[in-house]
Image (tube, rainbow, N blue to C red; front, side, top):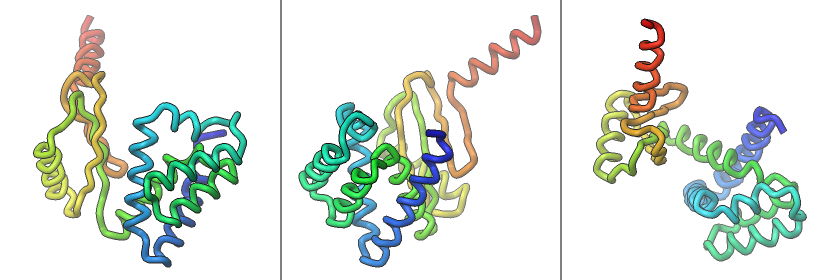
Length: 184
């Protein structure tokens, strides 16, 4: 399925979930559930296979995500949403749904989100200093999500909205390599 189609599907599901959560005053609870689910998906290869598997039946996927949601203590709304997504064979768009939902919630609160990649894990102090610097630059509260990419060698890649600042050592070395080729 083309990525544009996946994005449209994820956005529709996120819009519906956001509307229900808003009407039930569960925006924060569902956001917490989805953040936990996102971390679980990233941490477990088995869960990634479950979510993306076209081989498992709707019933098998539904039972598995329902059991997982109950064990994690998710709200009834999140539990029902996951069951519906499994029934409709839409579990493969969960990460997109989570991102779209959290983006809508941040926009409602007047917050922006930043994605930061670093070669090594950032300390809490570094993350808070980075968030403060981004708040000063953008004038609104910034939620920072960090990931580690050892391939960067050093430095950071910061994405806020449609802007990206790449100060990684890997990119600097690539630019130097291209400059050297141009001279010779």
